[in-house]
Length: 212
Image (cartoon, rainbow, N blue to C red; front, side, top):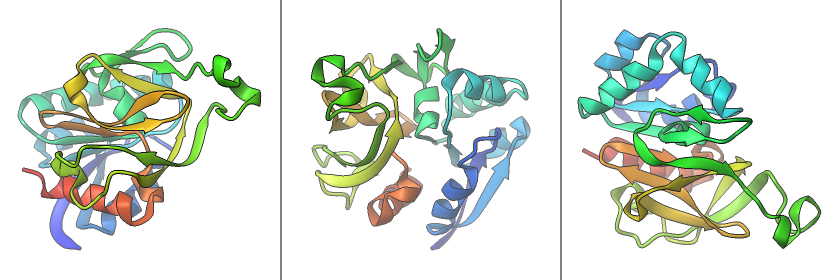
């Protein structure tokens, strides 16, 4: 554990404490905040999340956290989105209607459509839940020390579709390949739960903290 500080955005997400514990295993101080001014002063940001896209974005917008995040990113502050927090990074989601995201990564979020592969009664059930592999070319610093084929823990019904292929850092196979890690400049996202993914998840968090 090192002496650095990371600021975690608290907008009422139910998994905030488990994500906080994972960060505390790597860094000395995790600053929880729902104050946009604190977000603007951060040196590194983490945006966690579980639940529905529209409700989560509404919770971010009401106190002005959405504009604080986009301003911080424009000022070169690194941002890591986790699970639903990764989905927020995109332009929009079609979960229960159309909802605008933060627009930090071009692309959209959509639901797994696996009916042709068995659907709810077949081998590819929705939500995608449990351990699965992440595949990558070993080139991105976020994945240093995390071999391609490592397992991570997923719980999600919707997945991200980047508009630019180069923004995809890792993919996972679930009836089809989907983006499980995204990176664009100082904005990064992890679809799985690093706090539930044992040493590989902690290594990803450590790598994020080490990135300049």
